[in-house]
Image (cartoon, rainbow, N blue to C red):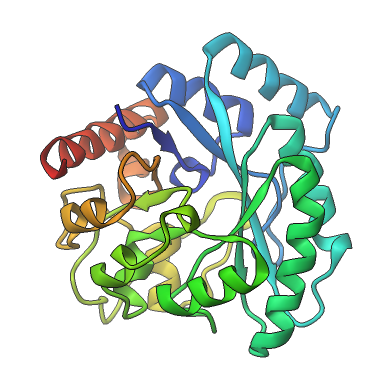
Length: 280
């Protein structure tokens, strides 16, 4: 069966060990863990190797049989360097992570590629592969651009259903990817066209910000469960390499306000299973 994991952004209010517990109870196969804050002012979980929270996460992974496949998140800008990524890589390696999610914000493509190649050189000995996620509101917005940069830098591409749609990529672009470039597919749903307006929730987990941009608000707090929107998800799953792991990344502030963490996790997993049952 296709492995299905729970991305931390779906329930970012949970600490990493609690995320493992909830994911296991819901029936997931793996989790993704945020080991590095993404936005300015965001609280960071203390996941340094050997820290109490890292040790407790490892204990719960052992108890449940789940694994951490990916850790996140690094924004790669003009001045990003080893001091920015090494703590996250060390935290991920302690958890047995296989990939490290990054986004490119440096508009200089040559410099961005060089930075990502340096990241890959540091990540490789730890058994971790950086994955470049094209983000619809960032300089690297399309699958094609991400694939070109990733190939040159020796890393992979993280395909996210929402950003495929919002960034102007197509299912054919995903199908054209070298299967070796795609270690995971992130699933969520939403309207076919970007909303003209979305209210920012009164509070986002960990002090995360969305800067008021509709695309950012949607991506970080207003995604919909698989099957609850209009995105061509069955075609996307079909276009991805056979058997690629699926990660459920559905931060939905409305659902989280009225349901328990376990209810949210179970709801998102059931929706994903329904999709892949019909897609393949």
